[in-house]
Image (cartoon, rainbow, N blue to C red; front, side, top):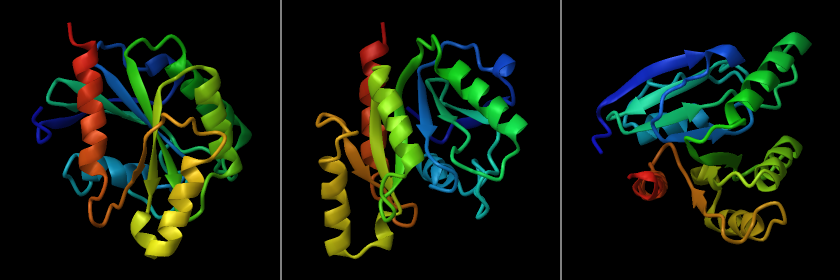
Amino acid sequence: MNKNRVTLSHVAGTHTQLYQGTLPQFAFSGRSNVGKSSLINRLLNRKSMARVSGEPGKTITINYYEVDNTVMLVDLPGYGYAKRSQSEQNRWSLMVESYFTNNSFLCFVVQLIDLKVGPTTDDLHMLDWLYETRTPFIVVATKSDKLNKTNREKQLAMLASHPSIPEDVPIVPFSALSGEGADQIWAYVEDAVREVEP
């Protein structure tokens, strides 16, 4: 897969605009400002393919990044941002729920959790929903470079034993600064693509 052949191929602002193609999809989920855009940019070796903002709640669309006409990386809007209006929150809920409903091309969800903060209440709701709906997922622990070695190992051990994260779910420490974890995430993506290829 040529990771340099990337386009922002589709943007959905409402549930009626969701991508209808057949490429395997990998959805990136997490709270506002957890680092989804930074992760996607690192995976794609681009500085600004996905817009990075220091202000939470900026991504309010579902953005589909097509890689080498082979896979679709799907940037979901961040959740848990309280300053959104009720109408915006309702639109977000309907759009994201519609994305997950009957999406046979979704291979797995990349669930981002800030390693320093640990799972928030909103993260736990999402993790429980993924488990209950039997949606495959991996956990990416972002901002791994922000902790010293002792705290990093402590936080990773906490995630590994967390009741909302099944034992067989991979946990990948990730740093946007160093790129730690990017190759491992791509390996999971490529394995999943091989499994769905005819």
